[in-house]
Image 1: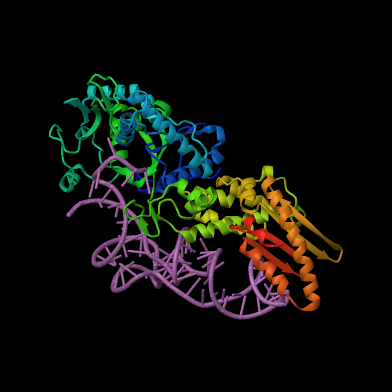
Image 2: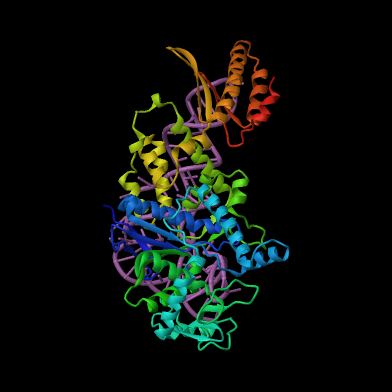
Length: 498
RNA sequence: GGCGGGUUGGCGGAGAGGUUACGCAGCGGAUUGCAAAUCCGUGAAGACCGGUUCGAUUCCGGUACCCGCCUCCA
């Protein structure tokens, strides 16, 4: 069995991964706040940890990994939207409207992340379903002297936790010195953070020993991770921006509430995403959601490929050029996969396995960039079994790749043994297009044969330019004519040919 | 201000204390009616200054620049 090695933020070193229980490897990843469409930055950790999830399943067995990713459905932005709808006359209580909004957002999230080829986690708990556990946990923290109620709030006492700041490499005193935050007057210490806060009439609230209120942001992950994964579990993941304060606070709460456990053993943080060299932000006008990209016709597989091109601990830049390269590579792969089985050795691809070196690349702190390089090697060497095994482990469905990136091709061949033509198509729409293009292929071939005799190629060139304009690649050689649709293939433009 | 990370060839992007990364683009060639695709070949790097070492792009220190977090953004 390969040894997985992961860079643990807790120790700042790359460590051998040793699960608490190899029969049940447990991973928790911070999920989205469901107030709007997921943007591309949200997608990065989803794809990164999906890849880790797939690797863990590969190494320990699909039934021996438990992956939890939460939905944060308690949030001011959600409240604001629900309130806006209520004031606009939508029926139902505020709680109903909040639920409506979060349901809608979760459905979008699932659709968008599915398009990126990510597996659904084993559990997707919602904060609102774990309020009871959060209240119980807060009560325990108060009883243990780690938290204190004041003015309807409950605050966590950071000075009660020795190791506060260890994960993010900060000291409480340094942070106070450089703090730019306004400190609520009722805090014992400026760094104390909210576990519970009161709700006004316009905000959702739950009854608690401290009055009607709602949980602070950090407690939900602690409560849900504990409920679903226990006192101690293996991996906790999320974006680097969550390292402080979110993860720091999670550790403090969990460690103090469950002193017999040690919470997560390995903390993984992915670096941030940039767009054309700049931070993605609405003010710079380079902000976009995953749905925006999909709607622009950039396939989810391309987005996934681009995200995997850069190691997860490096800042990653989304550029149009990278998307172009990823698309070109996926097209080459698809074209090879769909190519005539008679031209390559027959293998039962159902049992294709990724090569050892490929698994090792991923096992070395999820080196997806190196993995993609190896993948390119299998393509070049036409090692179909290796290629398919590697693609699957990386989360690419080979049949979908063919349907999307090489839907059909038509070709004629002239050989000593005779001549003929082949059509390959995947899916009904592709078949119809292939039929139409094949007619044109026949016509082009006739024109070309005539032109070879007369040396007048003008008719051939005219037809070729229309095909190219319609996004069809034209390949003519001694052995025949081949037409392959490119990424911009537009069947409507073929009508220009009579 | 405090803390953390980064700086590799035209572009993207890895590994490794010493031997070709790789991809894209470029260039040369094969092939082609032309082209495309494909194949073969090829130049090009390690921000700056010091140190350790027989030898550093790879380890250590400093400088510059960039980025992130400290504000319930992944």
